Image (cartoon, rainbow, N blue to C red; front, side, top):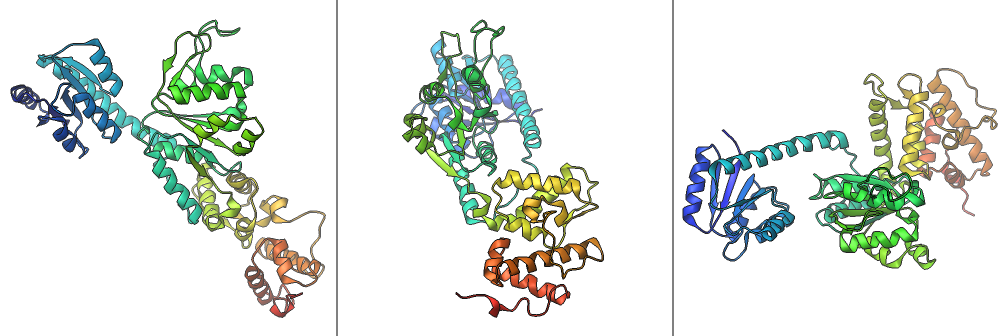
Length: 472
C-alpha cells in the first residue's frame, strides 16, 4: 500500500473512472478533476503528490496547468497523458517540468510502474531536503537581528527570494553578503537545486571562462577531458558570484549573454546549452563608479542590479552587536569543542567588543572571538585575551602610577581598566566627553564605570563628577 495522494485531470469521465478505480485498488488515494481550472484550485492546497494530467483539456491546457503550478511553487509531480503522440509535445511537457509522459490508452501495469518511479524520486528528494538542512545548518539556531536596518534587509531578501530576479548584494568585506545570498536561495523555489558560490577574484583571468561555462576536450592545452562548468552545475539552482567587480571586461560580455539568453557555450564548443540558473552577485566595490571609469559594463550593471540589497557594516547597527557577540561566542565555543561548558566574558570585555568599530565587520569579530577562546584560561575571557588593537592594552604604555595590581585576575583586570580610564581622562585635560570619545564608549557609560570604580575604591572620590565636563 502507498500513502501517495493522486489527482487525475481528464475531460473524459469514462477514462477518469476506469483509471481512478484501478489506482484505488492499487492503494492510492485518488481525486479527479475534469478541467484545468478545477485542478488548479485543488492543487493549490499543496497536498497532491502526483498529478496525472491530460495535455488536451478544455480551457486551460494540461501544459498550461503544469506551468501555473510551477509558478505557484506547488510541490506536485506531473505525469502527462495524450492520445496524440508527438515528439514536440513530449519535449514541451518535459521542458515545462513534467516528471514523465505517457501515451493513451494507458497500460495499467506500466502506469503503476511509472507512479512507483516518480514516488520513489519524491521520497529521495524529501530525504535530500533533510540532509541539505543538516549540511547548510538550516536546522540550527539562527541569529535574530534587532536593528531596523537588518530587519528590513531580511524582509527584502524574503521578498526577492520568491522570484527569479537577479540580485546585487553590496557591502563592506566581512558583512555577511554570502550569508544573505544563501538565505535568498534557501527561501526560494530553487531551494532544492544547487547553490554554487564562486569567488570571481580568486580565479586566474585566463581560466575564468572555462570555469564558468566549461570546455570541450582539447579546447586548449591541458584540457584532456570535457568540463561542465559552474553555470551548468548550478542549473536549476543559484550561482553566487562573489566579488563580481573583479571580472574582466571580456567575461562581463559573456555573463550578460547568459543572463539575457539563458544559454552557455563551452570553450571550444560549437553548440550552446540552455541553462536555468538564478544569479546573485555581490561586491564591496562601487560598481556605478567602475562603470563611469569604464571598468565595468553599464548594461551588465543594470542587469545585475535589478534588485539591490545593501548589507550595512557592524558599526551602523550596534543594536545587534551585544547579542551577536554572545551568539558567536556560544556557537564558536561548541564548534571548538570545549566539553559543552559555557564561556563567559569578564567585566568590561563585552562593552569593549560592542563599542569597537569593527572595520573587518563580522569576519573580524568572529576571528577575535576564536582567538580569545584559544587564549582564555578556563571558561572566562578577559581583556588580556583580546588583541591589543581592541583592548587598548600596549606593553609600552604603563598604567597610572596610583593603581596597584593585586588580588585575583578579575580584580587586576578591573584595576587595569581603572588605570586606562583615569589616564585617558588626564590626557583629555579632565574633559569626560572627550575621554568617552577616545575610549569609544558613550558618556553615560563612562560615568557609570567611574561610579562603579569609585565604589570599589579603585578611583578617587569625585572622579565621576559631571560638573568636570568642559562646556567650552
